[in-house]
Image (tube, rainbow, N blue to C red):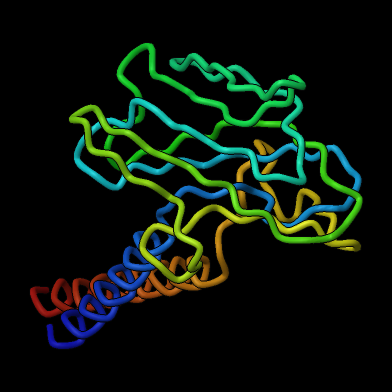
Amino acid sequence: MKINKFFASLAFVAAASFGATGVADAHVTLNPQVSEPGSYEEYNVRVPVERNDQTVKLELEVPKGVALSTVEPVPGFKHEFKKDSKGNIEKVTWTATDKGIGPNEHRDFPIVVANPDKAGKFKWKATQTYKDGTVVRWTDENENSETPAPVTEVKAGHGHDEHEHGHDGEASQSPIGQTALWIVSILALIVSAVALFKRGNFTKSDN
């Protein structure tokens, strides 16, 4: 019994650590975060919901130096552009036409961007609006803040492939998250094996 409780406690701690990691990473991001200069890159603007309410609007400002080319229509959302006098897209706004993105959910908004030929980092200011009117501005210049602006880096020799991203275009899980999942799985197997062993011994004792 003590062994079961010990392993169950370890499994709980590992699961809690994994959950904490997921919460810490729950902010608006653009994936991939690194791409090639001079290329047309498809980015997925990932929007997680951190509150117990639906996200009904997302606004994304295009940083100077990159050019937003196209936007893929997203079911349940309509989009509109704000353009400058030359017709360049300065901002795109997605507004929910139905329920929006629910609690503990996320949605990817695919866009295609023309990267500049020169390397550099670019901050995309994003504004997330919830159904109750709460507004979260992902615009902080400090990457370690609670609401950092999404950042992409244009850098030579850092193209991505399917090993970095899933077949559906989603970013792959972090090494920390994968390790936590392995720990939880292994501990669960150990707990099950110990429980079966004890059950077998208990059955033999009855006989």
